[in-house]
Length: 68
Image (cartoon, rainbow, N blue to C red; front, side, top):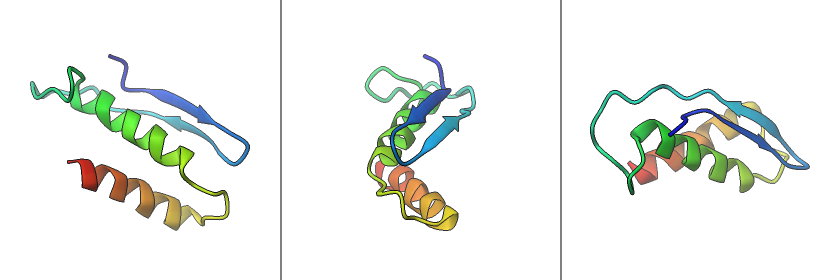
């Protein structure tokens, strides 16, 4: 249940350095940290490549917020 991930496509390259989850809540059998990593990787795949750093950060935060 690794909370770390790597993303790359023709627009972005990213390393997602997750935190080891301390909680017992599971999201479809996954830890909170693992689930958050998967949400971030999915969010990155939706970006079009023209976003500013702030826009990327805000979008990925919104992806997490909607889920949690």
